[in-house]
Length: 253
Ligand code: BTN
Image (cartoon, rainbow, N blue to C red):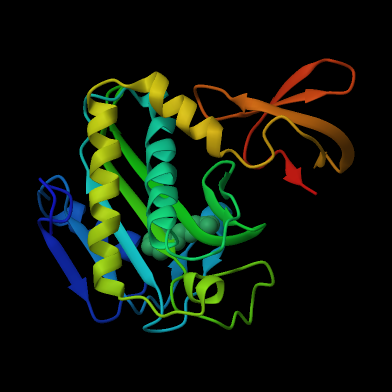
């Protein structure tokens, strides 16, 4: 592992229900050093956002949870962890696709789904626990579709293998992911917030274009203009009003 601390302590599991659940249990029992990763290629009951499940064919994809102790980060800044994780995954995708002839945009669909060519390739589930007003433990769960070519339960999924017709080494991908996360985490620790914010906006799916959304069972046209500090989606409406939405409040059409 060519990193300073991310992934230096690595727990590989042949199979596990959910690496995030395993990490939660580990933190309950012991002190866990910052940068510890728990990973598997066979996650049997992966958890997703909004109580959804995360499906993955055995031995085709990576499922990883990273444990951080970002005590320097105020609770109201926790969305920055979402941003750096999404950016690290887009960096990984760009690196892995750099020799392909394929040239579509790699995008972050708010809040932190990674999309390529309008299809989802990776999902992120971050679970934080606080001490007073700061973040004591952060479990950063990442699932990336690598070698799976057939998706039975989802219609809008893709994988690196589907995009390139190649197979990828899962362990090498984990190592590369760790180095990209470390680079972003060090940027965060060095307080390079403007750079992180700008990089995130650069990658944001549907930024600045008029699109249809739905909220409270009503369809409307809007233009994403950014994301607030606490992670709400900012949408400009046709009547020139700007509204902010939570994850549960808005649906992309
Ligand atoms: C989503 O898209 O809704 C988020 C999916 C997150 C999946 C990852 S895989 C590793 C970690 N362990 C889990 O149970 N979930 C996350």
